[in-house]
Length: 203
View 1 (cartoon, one colour):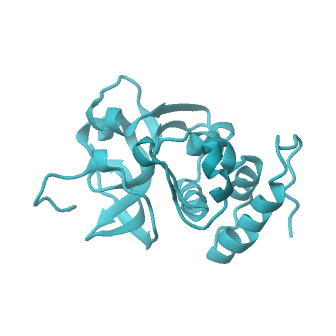
View 2 (cartoon, rainbow, N blue to C red):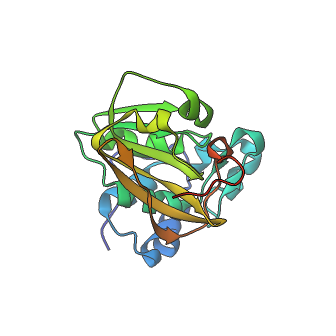
């Protein structure tokens, strides 16, 4: 097995828990790309949780933070990073789930990274264009305000709510449009800021 020990030691002694997470949750589910595993062993999940929930950092499901968001299951982040295949030249916009964990996983892998809250992603505009947008949660719809911030041929990787089931999904901007294609069913916290109007279904 490849040694994933990083050059700088983590601030706490939970590296064994991160190794167990990699061996029992990620590798067994097909996440074997070394750049993904190296980042996930380097970043302590408990640093992104309040102290009273730190003991839940390495469970195989999401940790809810109530109105403050969530920390999704390790497998979601592993699959999200694997599907995104971030490049050193990418300019990335991360739609936050409330903890900053996804942005920290990505930061050393890309040229530039900006974060935005789910609420601001739905309504806000910006001049910058991004080659990759990653969403830390499942959405019912991809708003035009967010599509407008994606460069032509840029990618989106996110969770998608489709017929009340959450799935990993990805898409690419072609002729000004993005169609998210579902890839794999998995448990993903829902970002309700992206809820569609009642009666609307994802096309």
